[in-house]
Length: 154
Image (cartoon, rainbow, N blue to C red):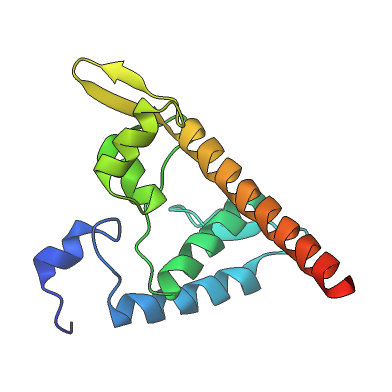
């Protein structure tokens, strides 16, 4: 291993960036899995007893996407859809500070639930907020383009 200690490697890729060896391994694995998928998208692997196990196309593509992120050198965290996130986890997913996220929660921009003295953010609410913001940016850019065309025409 390179500069990464054994203890750091054991943390998993949700806590650290992948090592160069892990990046290379993920790239090769993603390619091998993509090649191994049937024409109908099914992935066949051998089980413990040697029998073929069929992995559904959606699951196979999810595995390839996951390996692709690792191959790109990204940290990866799998979050089930119904997950309730802490404010720090939600802030990390939005790439904002926790105090900024708290302001968004207090302003009603993002739904949350109180659990004792703590706030928990449903993943669906965080995803909906991120999509709203993306759409607002897209609409603003479209409006700027329209105004620019009007200005050029005048």
